[in-house]
Structure formats: structure tokens, C-alpha cells
Amino acid sequence: MTAFYPIGSFDPKSLRDSTVILPAVSLGNVPQLTCDLLITSLGLKRVGYIGVGDTVSPFSGKGDDGDIVTGGLEVYGNEGSELFIIQQRSPTLKSKKESHIELIKQFILSNPIGLVMVLTSLDAANQDDAQLLTPHQRILSPSSSTSTSTSNRILQNLENLLPSLQLGITISDIPQSSNKSTYPPFLPAAGLTRRLLSTFHENDVIHGTITAWCVEGDNSNDAISLAQIILNVLGIENDVKLKTPASWDGLFGTINGWSGGAGQDSELYG
Image: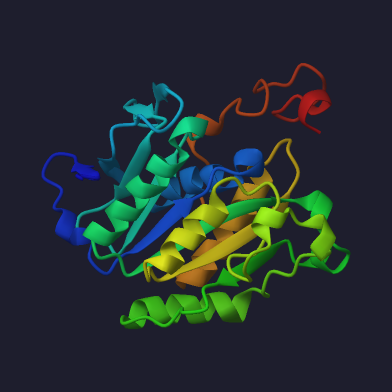
């Protein structure tokens, strides 16, 4: 099955041994907003599509450069780059969840990716007091050793910078179907994250995960915070200045704010 459709002259061989950031559609769309922020800040261009968009809700819109963006799985990067970002702007169809996971798996296995960095958001209602001071945590696969120095360095940075995810949830609180193994752990409001991690683990895909506790509302600051964490993990925090995408104008309300909000309608989004 062909999973990747490159655009123009992009050579899929550029994906070999690269780091791929993969957002899981989860609470507040924080991972997707973070990827938008990183794509703009790093000056990445769309280089291809994964699949034909039939596993997600139909969607199209106008991007920052005037190009058409879709709800399907788009890949952003640059020729010869070591970093690529997958973006998904609309939710996965319930009847296509397995096909969606399979698409991502085939893309990664057919283009020997060095490391997949999964981003996901979790429901802050399950956050304990200690985690209020650590809004970002990590999940590492039990088999996280890699064959490339870059992947090893990034995973080591991840382990050093962020604490391991600890959930303040008792065994009785966890759905029985989610309590079959210790990896991946139960992840509240994280969408397909557990299925993705299980698939990667079963297929020996080198991966790590960054989680962000959040509540739904104006999640732009959550995305900015998570993007900064990612730059630190990648070791390029001093080389990149975050730039807000033009597509964020009016994202959480009208620009001028009709109810006293500073750029957002505070009565709606807090």
C-alpha cells in the first residue's frame, strides 16, 4: 500500500533517519496548534501527503501562504532536513480509526524514520497537585534504544528535561480494556494516542511522547509552551524564535474582542 505522496520534486529518501513530530488529535487540539506554530517558526513547507484524506473528516482551508490546507495527513519539512512534522487538522472518522493508524504505520515503516516524537494533550481534571508545577511530562517506550546518535541525543534530552508521566488515577478508575499492560499507560482524553503508541511498540518504531495537561478554551498559550519544550528537547531553542501563524488571527474569537477581551472574546474562552 502506497502511504506517502510527495509533492513536486521532493525525494522521500530525505525522510531516512529523520525525526518526525506526530500530533495526536486530543483535548483542546494543543498538539495541532503546536505543530502549526513549529511549521511557521521553522519555515517548513508541505512536502507530501500520507494517504488520500479518506480517514478524516473532510476539510479544506487557506494556509498562511495562500495555499490550500486539508484535514488529511500533511507532511511538512524541507529537502535535506532532519526534522519533519505531520499535521492533521480534522478529527479521524470513527469508522476509519484502524485504517488511519495503518496509514501512519506504513508511512513510518516504508520510510525508515529515525525517531517519532508523539505530542498529546491530557485532561487536567486528572492532574494531581504536584503536576500543577510540571504541566509537561514524558512517556518513553520500554525499548527506546536507537541506532542513530541524533535519536539517542533527543531521547536523552527528553528524559533529562521532563519527568515521567505519573497519573493520579487508581486501578478502579481505569477502564478494564485500558488496563491490560503497563505500556502504553491509560491516557485520559488523548484520542488515538494509546493505539499509536501500541502500534509503534509492536513494530519496533523508535518513539517518545510529550504530554501536556490542559483544559478546553483558548489553548494558544498551551501550544506556545509545548512548542518551547519541543525546541529544548531538539536542542535548537537558541536558534529558533517562535512566530505566531497568521492563521491564528481570530482563532479564539474576533481580533478586536467585542466583550473586552484582548484579541479574544474572554466571555467565551476565558
